Length: 303
Ligand SMILES: [Fe+2]
Image (cartoon, rainbow, N blue to C red; front, side, top):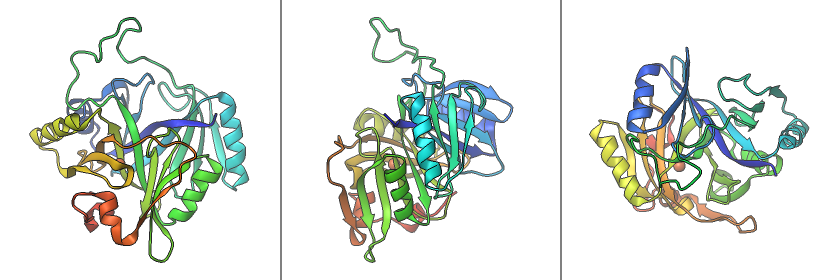
């Protein structure tokens, strides 16, 4: 019951045509719908209509983040909890928020991000048959990650947003980076029993750090770096190991300046496990385990 997983992320881009070419040909996502000012995309193995929306805007950044809930009643229960916290919500019928959209509850979280809870997004399948399927469809382009994995956001008060996600939305804390003064610098939260579905790091409210798509192993990550370099994509970091989440990642930028990641590895997180804590002195190693340092560029809002 409750939130199942990350559903979709909407990012802004000033040149829809250029961004669409990048996300379909370099990232290798599948285009599922086009509107005048929006393009809808998904990873090839996702059954749902979309996991990424490109929205025309004069700048970059994140417009909204959606989570999928398991049952229609979850929307009512979570709405009560969110409104009980003092946050107003707005309900939308299926289809009202664009192609494929499900029944949706929208609100602005204490971090300043617009968050949606969605039930019943249209299912369009993964292009494989349900009988005797091959492991992946033929003819995929670029990195072609199978699915979305996590989103990483920024806000001023990480302690408060972590409390909100755990106490109101039912997320579990897997890891945290704690400052010497006791405040949380970064937190990693999950609903899927993985190391993280969403994470927060100290920065400006409503700011975007990255959206990550899953690839199956280190070899796919290395191949993704080959593809990014071949296409002249600006690589930010990696392929490398994260200390926090124990995963491997490659960071790079879309044409608008939105940071993307392809990610793999990590661990299985039972709901009763204790969170891991990284100290401020070891923050570099928490983010980039091999390098042991995070440069300020990585922690600033970008382009
Ligand atoms: Fe990440």
